[in-house]
Each structure stands twice: as structure tokens, then as C-alpha cells.
Image 1 (tube, rainbow, N blue to C red):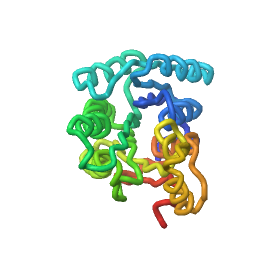
Image 2: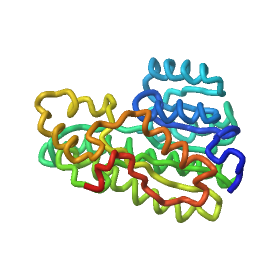
Image 3: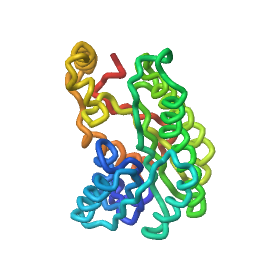
Length: 260
């Protein structure tokens, strides 16, 4: 293991987090900054980008926030190049950007929703990993962390395109882990449970989903929703030297939901 004096520290590393201006992505971005990494947030909401950039600068690490819609394929390689021009070679890529459309199932789901969901979760993860890994290979080190989901494993009847995308993320993570291991690049995924974010506001707050919310709480041994900040530790660990011999793993951070 390298950096034995501080195996969980990220000083001297450059981390890129897509969708890093809110929810889980923001918590991971701030957590990695506190661990010492220089941080680039790539997201499409400029106002939220500005707010998280201010928070990162308060921490005192080099940081940038770039406008990026991960579904615009032609812009992705340029975004990776822009980060490296500003901060140096990318050491850590967190593919976090995501969307979810509650359609009720394939009978209601449109091809447009399917395409948008797959483009955001799966296509962007593939392409950004491809571009970042090329740089990592040249320096013989790197960490790629993908965001999976409980719906990577369980049937997602209300959101089938989301479940399909997140299931594929697990397999893509394994494939990249095998390919990139000889280059000292570790590829892992995190599978969040039910986390209190903007994306999950409907099942938490909408009375029409009260029974669904009760099911979530009853099935979760921790008996509560998780907080976005509780995701940061897993990401920091997987990005650190402490996880240099861990690759191809999908780590649940779910309060025990997946074991029940």
C-alpha cells in the first residue's frame, strides 16, 4: 500500500465528481476536499455549481466547477481535458450524475425517457471513464467510482429504465476493473440505499407514497432514511490508498436494506 502514513488521505490527488453540486455528489465532493483532494465538480446547474465551489474554496483546496450535461457526448472529452489543464492529471473519477423518472412501468415509459436515463447513467459513465482512464494509464494509478443503486439488484417496476441502467453499472464496473487492474487502476461502485435527497423527495414527502415510505423504513434495519453525508466515507475509502487491493466491488451503503 502506498502512502502508509495516511492511508485514507487524498492530499495531492485530483478528484472529479459528476453531478457534484447537490445531494450525494455534493457530499462526496466536500468529503474528498476535506480529505485533501483538489476537486472538480461537473454539473449542469450553474447556480448550484457556484454554491458548491464556494464551499470547496472555504475548505481551502484547489477547486473548479464546470458546466456539463453528461448526455452531451461531444463535450465529455473536452471536460476531462479542461480539468487536467486546471488541476493536473485526474486521479479519482466519481460517476455520480443521475436522473430518475417515475413512469410506473414500461407500459407508460417513453423511448425518450429510456434514452435520457441510459445516456445519463450508463453512457456517460462509460465515456467519462474511458477518457479519464486513458490519463490514469499513463501515470499508472487511478480510482474510478461508479454510483450503482439498490435497484441494481431489485426489480424496479415503477422505474424500469433506471433499474436497467443501474444494473448495467454493476457489470460495467466489473468489466473495467478486470481491464484496468494491470495499470494499477481500481474500479468500484457504491450502491446507496434510500438516501434523503432532492431525487427521493417524492417517496419521503408525498402522501400518495406513504405506504411505500413505510415499507422502506420497515425493511431498513437502521429504521431511517440515510443522509447524503453518510455516503462520503465510502467514496473516500474507495478513492484512498487503503483500497488499493479492492476492485470490481459494489459496496452497499444502505442501513442494511439489501440484507432483508
